[in-house]
Length: 433
Image 1 (cartoon, rainbow, N blue to C red):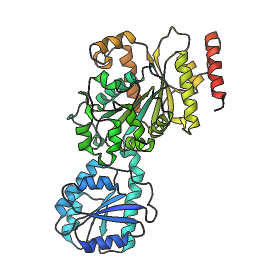
Image 2 (cartoon, rainbow, N blue to C red; image 1 turned 135 degrees about the vertical axis):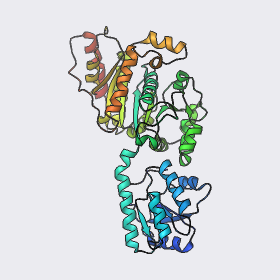
Image 3 (spheres, rainbow, N blue to C red; image 1 turned 30 degrees about the vertical axis):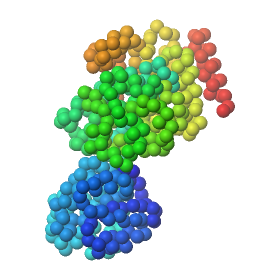
Image 4 (cartoon, rainbow, N blue to C red; image 1 turned 180 degrees about the horizontal axis):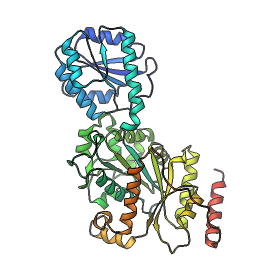
């Protein structure tokens, strides 16, 4: 369902659902909101949530009168559970004790008197939508994107490892007791396996998936907790997985706007989404995903090829109008014996340095050969400790609250190899087109 707007909709542009069986009350609500949009009446019963999801209304109004207070209350609770950002209000006659008491017991925050003035109903609905718009940022989960300019820099392994450790911090596998009240609305971590080579995260986690990111876009209007629980693959850690389709040709069948809308929609159901964008070739897709992310970690190693490719990608993203203020650098596969330091790379790429992850190829390959992830089997390994620090930083400074990273120091110009690399990157930034 689309997120509610941050202001009262323009006249005639909105859709409101009114759950009511009384034609006279439907007519009253239709007349009252005539200047604001279209009122669609629905009856309680099987399939109503799916209808609401397809309509994507700005708000839902539920009639608590006519002896249906119990059904109305049950619907209200389901909507709050499945769509916590959707504005929902009760309606009825203020002089009807059954309706007002039923609404009170259901815990409604707003009540529209169907015998009151139209201006009062409009004001109540306006206030409800403005409050929900103001709190939507705290209701929705966060999205962190890990972006690698080319395959081979370790972005997918890093994203997968980060998702596993974040899931542990958020309370473990499905069925575990939530650690906080927010977890009753959103649970756990979703790993968006969008990098290339495609579906590598599924291989690392030995978790097959028939439902893909393209399927998610195609079923955007139907997404609810039930669909996500049954359709998405889940690792035994509790991490939900949403990969690219096996046939990448299907990706061309969906728009970048719809892809972005899916990422926004999923944020209503997960505490955190980790989007793996390692090696993805479509700059437009990367740009759209980066705009939806609360934070972007650019993954790069110490190789000249990776640094130049990263510089080119950042340049392309800037040309697409992407603001890089929420971007920071993660230097992966770091080897202290290589003369290029992490801070020098960050300075040349003009990104703040967020994290440095050591090179542990032998340990990672050994774990993978056993069908395991290093971060789960070797807690004291330097790689695990570095990824755990990344996870802690997200918990201590959640996406959307600021980077909390260090500004890079000026790069050293003493090494001939580094000077040559600097010239390559500098000419790349200056090149027109």
